[in-house]
Image (tube, rainbow over all chains, first blue to last red; front, side, top):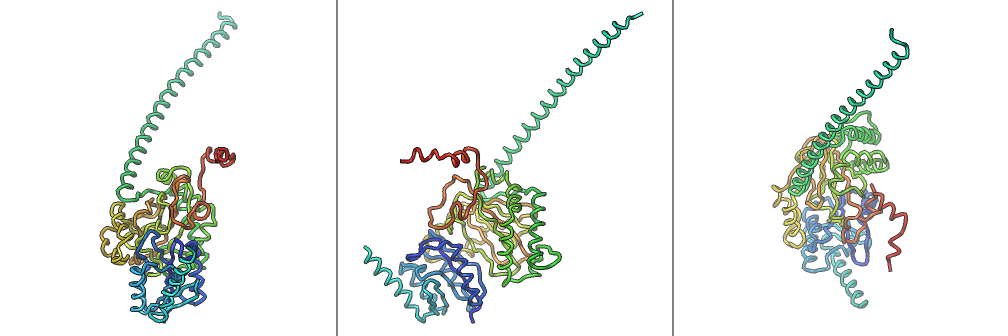
Length: 130
Length: 308
């Protein structure tokens, strides 16, 4: 039973979006309260890190009663070498992840493909723009 | 028989002579006092230079320095902040170390936010904080300064929800040229306090954070546990540290709560980070002090003349 939401934030653009961290914090807090879950202080990714080290750390120690909450699917790494181990961890530990902008939720391996799809469509539009 | 006129003249002369003598004595005393003052000033100057050298050496080596806050201003703030706790918790008296007896990990962030707002609404508290450490803040970042809000931390014993794992403040795009003033409201040591890793070691760990795919923060915590310097700070003392050095906290394993305040100070003219985030002047930093020439140029837009 999930009773705690663990927030993850980024101080850089994700996909087509950019949102200052204080508003990311606020949205995660309000979302946690609306779902009647315990809010824990969100952890931020070092903006210069190329490996999503904070996200990997959070996922590796997340507990069964906790779910990860973040703004967008596009906060996940675009680079497959970095993204795949993260998705494997979500599957393996059956982690629940909430994406606020896309209004999507994944639970472990269930519907995890939406992440790949979102990145695929985004890259398609990006190549069209060029 | 001496004539009345002669007596008057004699008296007059005596008074004049006496006045001249008094003037001479005053001059001599002035010279002595001046000399004493000069000696005292010279001594104080020498002492300040020595302290600055010592402080700088500590800062460059360890990433922080410790000092005594102005006692009166610290006590005044402590009283005001304690009152906020009493009002929010609706109790008659509290020792801030015992906060955990009146709240729990579920409610503590709500309490923290309420008191954080009240602290930052009070001009007096922020001013007191600045004045209580002004000399040291100026030493660290100069005298034209901008500052962040006053952040409040409440670290209850065994609370796992308010942790700040090893980090630097520029992770989230804050300026690398800022200094953090940090002080607890009680004596703190070990896990009730905060840790900092010296600049040399921080840089080598940051290189791992940047590009090592095989590591994560838990592994780094274990690997570099011995390099964490837990700072012992007494009530009324403070530290100024460079938040470029890795720092953070762990679960508070002591049986006392830590209530602490931190404020970021930055020189008005030092560079901002290149990261795209909101931490700029006006959103994250507010002007704390400005000198005459800066005010002058704000009032008269001479800079527009030279712009193409």
